[in-house]
Image: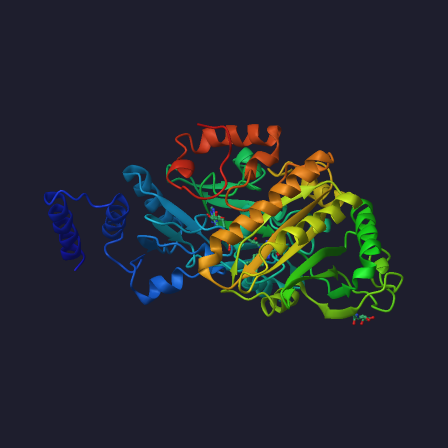
Length: 502
Ligand SMILES: Cc1cc2nc3c(=O)[nH]c(=O)nc-3n(C[C@H](O)[C@H](O)[C@H](O)COP(=O)(O)OP(=O)(O)OC[C@H]3O[C@@H](n4cnc5c(N)ncnc54)[C@H](O)[C@@H]3O)c2cc1C
Ligand SMILES: *[C@@H]1O[C@H](CO)[C@@H](O)[C@H](O)[C@H]1NC(C)=O
């Protein structure tokens, strides 16, 4: 069976060559993969139902059309495939959970999509209180595995998010101010590097690679598994609060104080501006969502959170979400509000906290949105996420990472929604227009940080440039050791790249 399949492929390529039309390299590569894996079910072609399932993304805007999808069962399959890709110059993309919004990062046209969805083992080790997680998992299974032991992981806020991309680009969790970036809590990476070797990187073996991978994205290989620290599981309570326009100045002042004080590592606050279009006009709503990651009494809020709900700043809606729930349970609740299948994109910058700047950015967003309000289904949000000194210190205490942050910043991102594929380009233009103005205003005020959080970054941003010179030098030297021919730069076209290399 396998043999005849291969010989059919041979014939078809001969016929194509004889008629003067060379077979596209990507289809040739799919056929080579097919014969390497003996025509089994591991290579999936277009027009099959499995292809449709494997090629579905959280945001439909990030979907592309791979020539075939390769679904390895284990690390050794991946090692064989990477050797084949290198030998035959096959282009590919790596996909874990498919949650990144950027088309061409975990998706590809005219190339092979390496889908990690069958790498879904999760094994808790009670004696070391660590959990081994294969890259193709979603956070839900990790929370569900460890929480019965009274432990939890520093993982995604929404439990449907994929493990692989989230971790390799940093990872923001509700526990960040206590434990740093999610990736700071990796004890060991298992990775297939460019020459097909399977390596372990931890604080004893391949140490420079270990650090580089913490924010190193897809530059160094296919990461197949992570051994993660677990932490004590505590019961958390969250809330969503809306404010009338008359409270805005006081809210921003309190937001600024919250960011610069960074006094309570168990609390986390997001500041949100929602823009919608009502009766042909842009409507602005100011809100926050906060979470406190330990048991507390809502009638007597912790000091850091009190200013937002003690009534001194009048609010128009206070909704307590998830009383005394585990991280996994909060993560599950978020999957009920953040729905897949909606057209969306996103770009980010980071700024040094500043009251005037925060206010100015909102005004620019509203003004720019005016020009796009007639686009069907158009809404957008602007979110501020503070990264405090405790967060950065927690990462440094665990050996440091590639992100290069030394001072507190506010990460902000703009994320529109709209109805129709025909408006994809114009909305991409809207976000670029907003972010370009943000950058200029922040820069002129001396408050622009170069950091761009990769999980929220747009496809054409500065990306890893923002990690800073020292981090880039380290990444470059690790790259020379583990991927000297830049396989993960040239054959893997999508995703952020270590700058200034070749
Ligand atoms: C609903 C929703 C909620 C979110 N919540 C959070 C949140 O709480 N905190 C947060 O920080 N982010 C959040 N994000 C953003 C999220 O972190 C990113 O989209 C992240 O990249 C998703 O991981 P993934 O495995 O699904 O990535 P994919 O889309 O599969 O991949 C993203 C990138 O990582 C690369 N990559 C993936 N796996 C590997 C691997 N094993 N080896 C090498 N390269 C790999 C891909 O090639 C691609 O460039 C959220 C996104 C959504 C849609
Ligand atoms: C959580 O549980 C504690 C202890 O039982 C209780 O005092 C507290 O009020 C609860 N929190 C919420 C938000 O219900």
